[in-house]
Amino acid sequence: MATIDISEKTFNDIITGNDIVLVDFWAAWCGPCRMFAPTFSKSSDSHSDIVFAKVDTEAEPLLSATAGITSIPTLMAFREGILVFSQPGAMNATGLEHLITGIKGLDMEEVRAKMAAAPTS
Image (cartoon, rainbow, N blue to C red; front, side):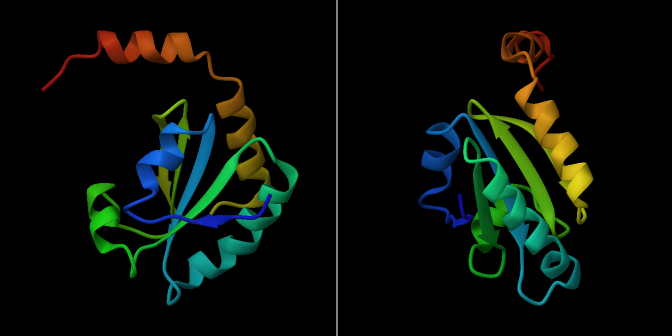
């Protein structure tokens, strides 16, 4: 599956409408973003069960701000609509595969229980 571009208008539907979504926040002028792009794209070809989405931070400044993006590239991972990973910096292919394996292996009942038990501010 190829990567898809998402916007502020499509973000929530993509996140909530799919089991696992990886989102790469990037910009064309960002060298590390350009280095990570082929790794992200190649991984999308190997994992047809995952949505690989890209957000151009220049074209979507409000979405980027709402997501708390302060450095690019930033990779976010959502499982069943829940943010389970967020990290700035380019990732190599091995790291991305380990991340995907970890996300697929999450016990989402446990994740929800921890979220429910967490204090709210």
